[in-house]
Length: 470
Image (tube, rainbow, N blue to C red; front, side):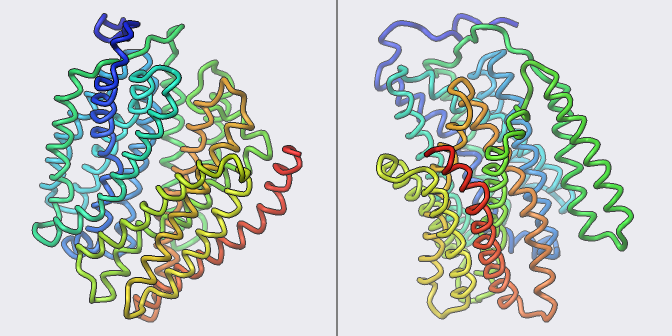
């Protein structure tokens, strides 16, 4: 299938009109916000748990299936955008988001809600997959970094306002409202995308879509999730060991296939470099520990008894505000502070923030919690800037896009592991029925574990990185 003339970028200088580019940036950001605005659902976790009469650990599936579906489809439809036009893929994703976000609010039971979350993840992943590519086509090459920076800030804005919107909606409406409010937003993005000025850049050569690699990836990640879940619930060790063996086989098949094709889904060969692999493991680890905030923090605020749902959303929004600030400062300090220093400082600050959240969670005032939330986000933002720069520096210039996708793989695995592992730890600490104490201990233990992990990688992986850059 070939691209139409409307799908091809014009070389007319007028095409780079400031207003046309700004229009396109806002439309793409509007559709891409379907992802970060899902933070409203995190605020609704306690309400959904009560409505469906669930245990806290059961809410993990709301997270797992959504993140797994979204992440896998993002990789798939990014490739399809190269083949058939990024505008088309974006519009399909926006239309699907409008439909699914309307239907999911009518889920009659928890099982159907989980199934619809899968379709929600697929639709959001489709809309997100081509957003950055479209943005780079809206502006001339000299302004590409500016465009991506604006897109990233707008994306972060969605993550910050999502919890606030969710809290307000829950104060006035039922839990389905945290899904329904995004239907008109997605519909507006679909309609406005019709006039996107630069929808598609035809590739120099036709890409090959690695469907077999995608299937292996989905199989490997799906078995990984089942392995974590069964290890937690199995009465003996036989079933988890069997699942571990199956996962190892699936992983081996995936790696073997990816090494044998010219255009793989993931460039797994880079993981053979010890420094690169160590940095990606660090990405996985920090996302594992920090997912505690979006997973358990709404429950901790609910357990206090003196924080409304609206204020719970406002307080949670402080975290992404800190991340935006950390990313901005990390970029501003790029000339005077090394990327390795940003990564080290980011880990230390986030670890201290998690411990602080745990120690201050039951204080009479919520101000200390908000301060530590901001600090935790600040550390994550600094870490992300330094981590991405280190990753792209290790790989060649021609593989910068690959570097970004590999960092996203580490983030995905961290979230998937955190969704199950963190609730597991909380259940172990909640044996005496004092939920607030269990929440506090969970944060303190995870913060201490992240600090210990940071010390280990500092004297192993980061020392090698420092030696290579001197």
